Image 1 (cartoon, helix red, strand yellow):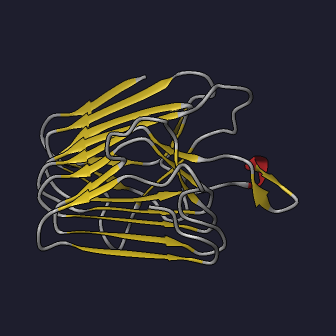
Image 2: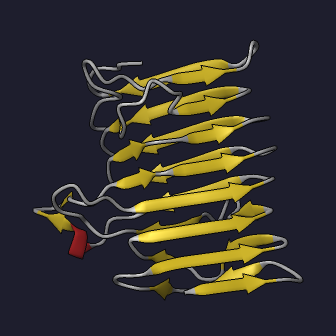
Length: 195
């Protein structure tokens, strides 16, 4: 599914596909057009715009649980800020615990912040803010989703990680992070922190 806006903000309602790819481009922003809605739900979501969501009205997305070695894919490219929320609906929970993960395949902002809040565990492949900061908050764990020694998170002005009920990284698989010379690193977790 390919959607685009060439003049103004792309105002997202609810867009979903159970097996395909959602691609959305906008010359301005992609913004949340509803209250209490999931804007995007698909195994593969690709967003390209000037900015995504706002600080007071995040862009909301969900992806299904996967089995075996299959993983979901979420990629973003912006010049400006990204304010995102990953949700885990009843269909993606067992006994109230999320069984889906927020896989951050490749999130890039050349000038803005990347700020993601997740109801499920976060699996980081690559998140890069080349001129601003990165903030990731999960109700559960934040983990490294690959075995590459390349940085998982780059935040020029700083990196802020929070795991409310889990850990950050794992023994032998800590998150690789890079920040600018004056940037700050904050990491808070209920469990251990491996960086």
